[in-house]
Length: 77
Image 1 (cartoon, rainbow, N blue to C red):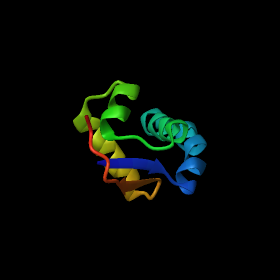
Image 2: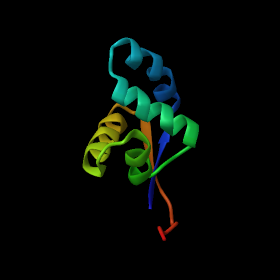
Image 3: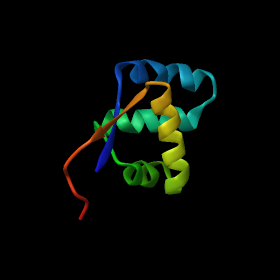
Image 4: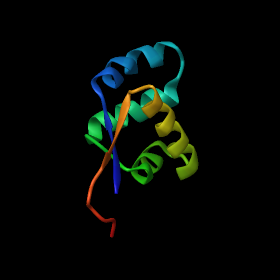
């Protein structure tokens, strides 16, 4: 299972994204900071997005090094 975790630079980017009007990205990063890691499904449920859109946004944030992908041996129920 893949968890996505907020990086230190991602935490610093939240207020900057809000100033720039990029609320969706800021909300995703804020959720990841509060959850201390989440799957794509959890982010989609929390932010009220479909999973494909949430996945695309998280991958974009990962490319900016604001989110880190952590693979675990955990298995979903």
